[in-house]
Length: 178
Image (cartoon, rainbow, N blue to C red; front, side, top):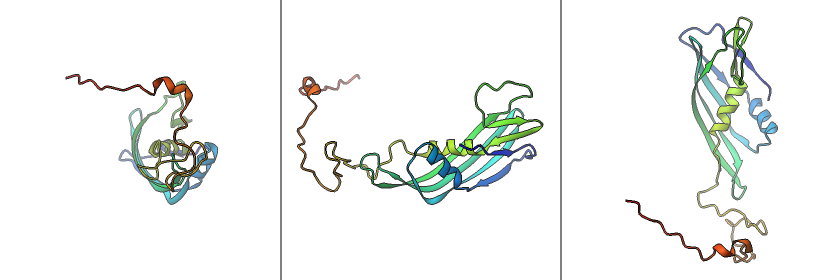
């Protein structure tokens, strides 16, 4: 993913607000990570950078609406993005070796924030792990691929995995530990 470094050297003590609504970031990330989604309402981020003694505090919000495939039946599913974020990034000292990637870097006497890295990370955190078109989505038939929400298919429901035969008579009893 392309890095986009924002110069935050001259940000005053009270902080400075930034608005980011370049849709290219999301399209580039989706292509790079092979993610399927369509933007219904453009994604937009508003964040404030406040300098601290040994770093920068970044507070903001990412909003928008996406259409993603349902995890069970692949039907288009609307997902509302409304992610608030609050993070502190330590600023590396002059000459200090940075062992892990950071969203803030020092270039000469300038301090820079990786906007693309920050916003992509928050975007991924805002996505549901398992987007569903509805809580009771029946998914697709594992045999023929028929959408079971639209009705049954001709496949036999009793085709059970023979490797699980020993477990078919198993009963689970829940004990009360009080």
